[in-house]
Amino acid sequence: VPQGTRETKASRVQIIKQSLLARGFPVRVADKIISKHQPSTIQLYECYWRKYVVLCTREHTDPCLSTIPSIATFLSDLHDSSGCSPKVLEGIRSCLAQTFKLLAVLDISTDPAISAVLQQAKLSTPRKIFQLPKWNLLLVLNHLMSPPYEPICDISFKHLTWKTCFFFSLATA
Image 1 (tube, helix red, strand yellow):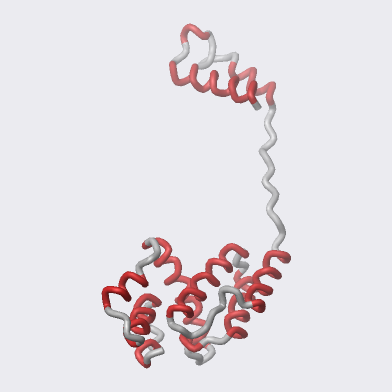
Image 2 (tube, rainbow, N blue to C red):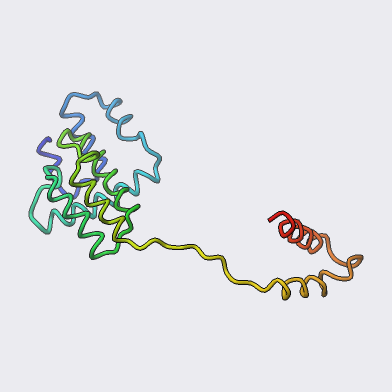
């Protein structure tokens, strides 16, 4: 990792680009490598990277020279104190894994300790059960037998479409 990458104010993309250039990649190739994701993913990864840099700054460590224990602790703390969901933690791991691979520092994408932290987060997070809202069929049918849905010869095309769609979905459910 080149000396310039240790500046914590640099963005994740800048740090990766500096590292690739220091390893001998031409600028045009480095630009292609760092722009392989959609802009929204790059922005999200930058947000995750910033969170990690804040932790490293607080602990007086270089984020570009991270260790598996420091990353595992970071992910565990995010889940325990901030309530990050397992999906968010997986996104953060993906960001950090790609960053460290491109920096040629370490590979956390398949590390068993990191995987164990994420698995424990999944197990300790209660599953959300989606429940359909309760509704009263009789109330809905009574409403469909009154204006603006009746008399049928006087209703608008919009209300006729809604009524037809409701009965069709009720019949095919």
